[in-house]
Amino acid sequence: MDADFDADAEWVASRLRDADVAVALTGAGMSTASGIPDFRGDDGIWNTEFDPASFHRDRFVNDPAGFWRDRLRLHERMFPDEVGPNPGHDALASLESQGVLDAVITQNTDGLHRAAGSERVVELHGNAADVVCESCGTRFAAEMAFEQVRDDEVPATCRTCDGVLKPDVVLFGEQLPRVAYAKATSLADDADVLLALGSSLTVHPAAGIAGQAAEDGSLVVVNFDETEYDRRADKVVRADLTEFLPAIETRV
Picture 1 (tube, rainbow, N blue to C red):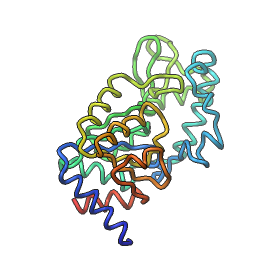
Picture 2: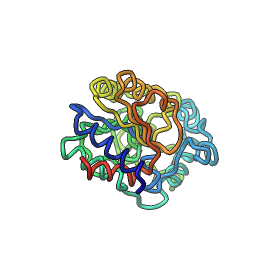
Picture 3: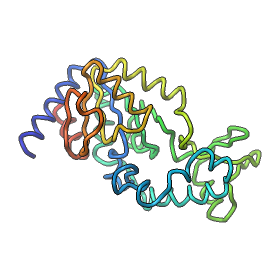
Picture 4: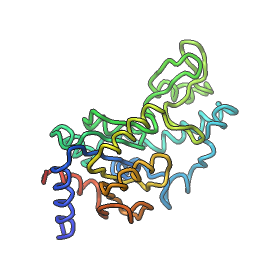
């Protein structure tokens, strides 16, 4: 590792040690090392493989069968093989278990933070492992819905009331869940340091959480690419999260 990497890791570790409340905000870049593709980068799947309009709330309402066929394609692209947490996820879970990190706020729907052992996780965009019935509210494992679609039973329907199932994620055109967003903004208000990790910080209102932290100088951005909040951050680090987060964890 070069001197800048070591110095940056020690600087962030020092901030975490001194913080009464420390929070991480994670985006797609957190999970790319686990084999989950990026969405919004130049080579991201929204720009190269899928039309985001296919996953809009209006499409789900007006063409649920077509929506579910495309949802299965997206799922198989996102999870082509068995994926699991990477060293970055593990480091955040370890920091929480040590009492250094208070919570993880994530824009990701892959569930890898919980799989790594993080317990206080605010999933702003839901969790792709679940589906919920639009009619009766019953929840099921998403794999049940995908099996229906593979068998050409579309749209995927509820085994309880035959209502249409919806992925338990925030679709384009939908608002963030109120409870999750309220928890996230409260954490950002309280945070002495907020680590924005692998997020482009372009999706609002989630990106505004970083803006809250930046107002009092508690924002640290770790991302290979520039973000619109870099100039407002107390520290910006260009580093691989699977290397940088374990380096912080060992120094804390």
